[in-house]
Length: 599
Image 1 (cartoon, rainbow, N blue to C red):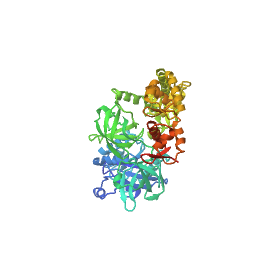
Image 2: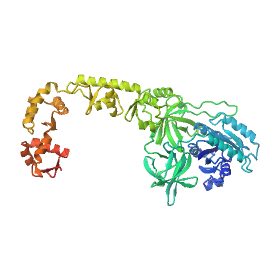
Image 3: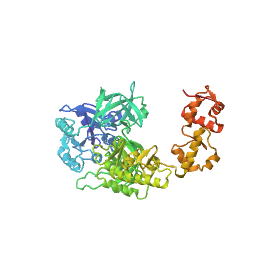
Image 4: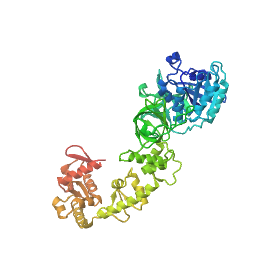
């Protein structure tokens, strides 16, 4: 299937043309048929001479419904511009062409209707002059008459040639189905419709809607039930257990965990206004000339945004609600005074870093300028240093060329940043060793903070590259182990005392006599030479295991008093020791005074 949108001035025959081609009524509402004008989006389809199926999104032409027009035009890969021979090019013709150009639509067809009422030559010539400055300047032209049917065969043939030029869709890509309608069917529940531009949807699929999982209960396309619908297609999706008020136009059905919902994007202004006869094409306004309060039209969504200029043609947008956007997305930026002159924008960064420092906006503009037409993976790596692979995919960046990129697990790292981080880690480890002979190992958390790493997972890979060794929780030089230094004799004496009486923890006076307090005692505990239970209660590391063997020989359950007697110790030591065994799960406390060995 192929999908194209209609466009053109109000009452120039867009809906009539769709009826001629499809035999279907695209205007769904009674008010539309009564007033003879399209107010909301309409849909119809037909088979072309080649056998290809073509679906039309019929958009309103009236100025007051331009938001609806953009919702239909946004997801469409091609456009059919309709101009009446008896009226010629009009105001909304310019607006719709400007919107198509702003969205970057490059495939289209010019159709002059009512050729029975006036010679179409003048309207064709005038329309072609307008198209010359647009993205569909090379569009084919056809003249038709809805009253007589003249030119209908030529139009069908031209549509066949148009769809043959459209790029093939990628049915393997992730799904982003912008919702343009949502309604309820008795016995089925909530149904949403949209244009599926990429990917494939199947009955039973788990998708994501507003951050929540949803299940596909059923699928329809072109009025028929389907089990599987590949792109490109007009599709109706029946959602299981989703209330009608839980979905609206501008929402999107997404492949789960493959998209980043963002409230901030960096964009480039990309619009040039179509030339009018006798007037040369001029660039659009700079970002500084735009208002701070704008509306972003993307897909079928219309979201208020705050604009912060960066460079002459770049800006940062803060969205009123999060949208699933990716690098390269085309959108329209407008305010109430510029709806008739839509500004095209291209998303350059779907998850930009915050601008916190003075001069950050100017630096950001320079970075975006240096990145060229569209920033890629290497640009992002230069800006961030390291990126998780899943984030790169969520931003819509390809991963087909990783030459010169360091890979560490799920992380991709810029080559220059990698070398700098390795050097900085080695320097930080050496500084730690110089400052603390007793504890020369740099904790992983300290290493991450010193280097400004996005995650501690990177420390081990950087340590290996720097010829360092990693221990539990730290990084150090090979062969350089933590030592007690002058406190070594005191620890050895305490080990001897505890070896003879393993549950006779030294009191504060003994620790003071040995000068084994504060940092020296903490280092001994860190090195595993001693075990600190609570406050000044210090035993050998194997004391809990020894105690457990003794307690297992007692009648179960046993009291604290029985444990104290069996261990030959005091309540000062036994109570913290038993609580330690409770935390380990080796013993289980039954009440205030009784415990038992856990089986």
